Length: 452
Ligand SMILES: Cc1cc2nc3c(=O)[nH]c(=O)nc-3n(C[C@H](O)[C@H](O)[C@H](O)COP(=O)(O)OP(=O)(O)OC[C@H]3O[C@@H](n4cnc5c(N)ncnc54)[C@H](O)[C@@H]3O)c2cc1C
Image 1 (cartoon, rainbow, N blue to C red):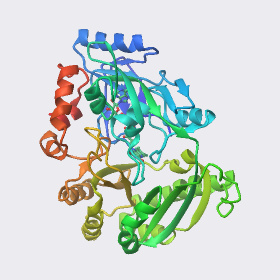
Image 2 (image 1 turned 90 degrees about the vertical axis):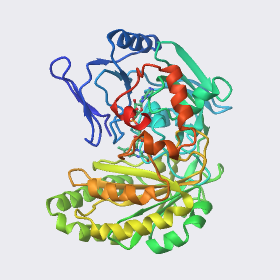
Image 3 (image 1 turned 30 degrees about the vertical axis):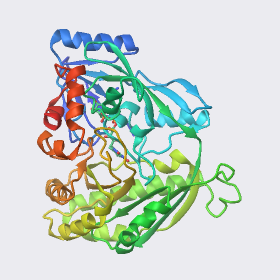
């Protein structure tokens, strides 16, 4: 999966475009720093020119959160692990490192991130800044794995924050929306490498909802995908093997590691090429979409395998789509899915993609979508090029009834007035922002909307 594209022509007309094609921008300047001093100089130069600054990640947010008409800081040359203590698991990496590169480097050290989302194309700082999460009722999102952060602030100075040093900046900046400064380095608390036993099987959606709490409690990482016109959900249960039971051991023999050819067949051919073909047929003939969706649901099959954690968490996503996702109180997930089942048949434009449901533990990060509550994440998608606004609007009305909080990197229409009451520490976040960036040097139009 590539970083977001940029197309260069004459100076000042190089366009930035996100992965899903839902946001574009034409920065006045591009800068690709290779040191902290160069990052600081870029911020100071922007201030002298009266320009705003955005650090770019991989462009995998669906919102325009990374877009800027000012200075685009391309951090693709600011990568790699700079320190690692395999005894404590503390690892420091430069902020532009992609999760893919990080996972590979960590694997070489015998370490891993405790939890991950569905893909690994994001940069470390980009993933953290929007509250990227995976699934697991006893685990928080990626930002809960952060031990400390180093930033360049709006005046060009360097700052370090952790639970004991500038704790307010730390509570805000772990999921800071890029609004507080340029993160230059992240220290993560990693865990020893571990193997996951993956079990994926279809189940009637009613049964999944009846057993939702038990499934979330009984599995390290539980999630399900529901095709909106089908009756079945694909339930994914990923559980950690004890260190003495690595992939290929006798204990894991019932679910051996997936051979390379089968991995290619399952993930590249079936989940990307074949599904992409169905999506293209649906886009050409939208009236066929409910039947294609039912076919996808009926074709779900069982598979079990073991592999290193990141090779189970992460799969390739080559079929492009638009997405919205809300965190809702865990106990309301049944209500939300029931409402969506009512909404789908009445949509003017049918939905090709499944709904994904995950879980996360409560945390204490100010702008975390799981702040102070056990959460379920409900994500809806639509294939690129098909209309999605009506579906996304109705979804928002449903999750609004249960105080849903939108993922900062996925499509939503909420503004500061509606977001404020959803986040008990919203005003404290804005106060810290006003202290460290009084002129909104790191602002853009998305932040003006969501932070006011
Ligand atoms: C196919 C796909 C699958 C996805 N799967 C998941 C998933 O499983 N779970 C989930 O929660 N999300 C998921 N997402 C959303 C994605 O994780 C987030 O949108 C994430 O922020 C993207 O990271 P990025 O590096 O592309 O950052 P960008 O989108 O480029 O930027 C995001 C924000 O980070 C800021 N930023 C970047 N670098 C820095 C820095 N050094 N300092 C300060 N701010 C910085 C940017 O300015 C911007 O505000 C998925 C997205 C896609 C397209």
